[in-house]
Image (cartoon, rainbow, N blue to C red; front, side, top):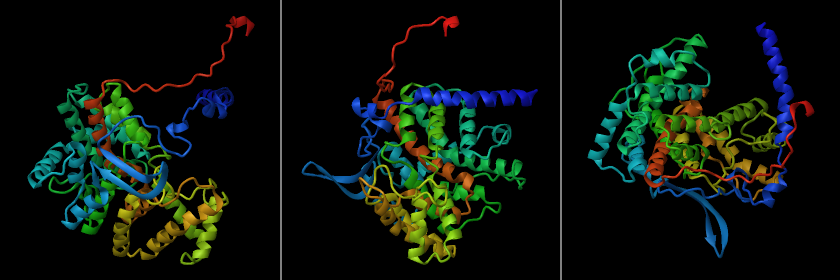
Amino acid sequence: MQDIKKEMIQNYTQKYSKICNENNLVDFSLYEKYGVKRGLRDINGRGVVTGITNISLIKSYDEFEGKSIPCDGELYYRGYNIFDLVDGFVGDNRYGFEEITYLLLFSKLPDQNELTEFQEVLAGCRKLPRNFVRDVIMKAPSKDIMNSLTKSILTLVSYDDRVSDLSLDNILRQCLTLISIFPMLAVYGYHAYNHYECGESFYIHRPDDKLSAAENILRMLRPDKKYSEVEAKVLDASLVLHMEHGGGNNSTFTTRVVTSAGTDTYSVIAAALSSLKGPKHGGANNKVIEMVKDIKSHVTDTTDEEEVRGYLSKILNKEAFDNRGLIYGMGHAVYSISDPRAEVFKGFVEKLADAKGRRPDFELYSMIERIAPEVIAERRPIYKGVSANVDFYSGFVYSMLDIPTELYTPMFAIARIVGWSAHRLEELVNVDKIIRPAYKSIVSFKDYLDINAR
């Protein structure tokens, strides 16, 4: 009986999905006619301004005599250049995640006493409710760890007596708690899946309050809890580079929109997670790994630039890899000449590759980064430059750190929860109106028909 019902539902949805498609198509020329920006982007790909922020800034072009001239990409957190921030904590041999989290939340760099206090507060927040791992994370585990994360976040509502309290101190408490426990929720979610679905050993390592976020992630993930300083420092840099990005990305906009409705922090972050997990937003690093693996399996000599170039052309022409015609990790909605995050990250990647004995892989990535823009420019009309984005290298880093692919996008979320929190706080402080966009209706009027006349 169940099989008959299942088949009936499948036949119905297949039939009516075609009807949905036919009846929902909009003539693309209408977007131009009514001045509607598809995807909230203009014809040059720039985002439509939907708000004001003091959290971060992206620069990808200079204005000269009324014209926009592409320039090397720049990224600023609270007015500080990302290059200077990373050079600062790396030069002093510090971990940067906690320090830059403080900066994004409070708009100032902490002194040593403020940083120490902040680290202690985060450690104090780094605790899950009693039996939460058993009752929530271990129940119905999923290969999709982003969905597991979302489930955990929404379930935490049941353990918070002040869930709907929108006072700023309460919102800040909730944000600090989520920033602190995100690594636990993600890593434990993976271990539950790996045990119950893959048949591997199950272990739960508790975080160490004396360690940084990056160190704790590796400690909790690995059976022996061991990691090298190089590994932890590279992961720390990755988290910092993924924390925030100008406010104009999909998941941050989602954070602002849902916050403006007056809902609770858990619902807001769950919505942001749902946005980030989309392959058009947070899943690109996974595709880069798959693409490079495909290149290595089809190119006989990965040091031969012409052979690699030829295969990239096949990928672009939809003749190889996934036949979608995309060279993953290349290009960005905002940057043209360079993505500053990729520029900062590349030095860390090279250092880790040498430590892991993967210099040949690094050389291949570097070659692809150099020649892919040329291949794209030869075959596609480009309104702005194309360069490697941060996702081009992040997947490679995660693979060298032995982070399973199921955790690639959750690693992004572990970092971006900081930016989401900063934007939620800024939205609550400055705006008391719900974000309500307008749509141009093209509905045609119809006369009602009695059911017997239809």
